[in-house]
Image 1 (cartoon, one colour):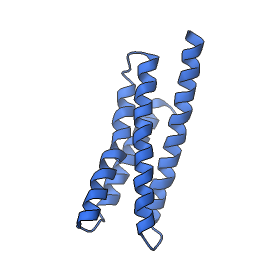
Image 2: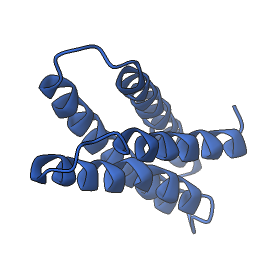
Image 3: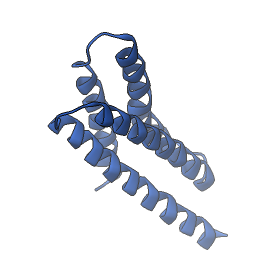
Length: 121
């Protein structure tokens, strides 16, 4: 997968989060969860896109780590939402799987970038 394809994947994930939250009932708890997950679920796309303009390998790694942090926050919120439901939700399960795959991709990218940084110098 090239950089542009991965950037689109992050964008689709963010759009999926937004679409998923549209089904939330309007109450105080759901509004809080909705606000949190929209922020953390869309942020990785923004940080990944920003990493394309990194000023150095260290800056690139830093931007990826911020995206990774947001994905981990999203994972926690998705788990909280899943724990509060009493029936399977295919859309939620898809988001959980995609979130896990994006985390794995960024962990691998950070490791590779660190290795490349060590090789440089």
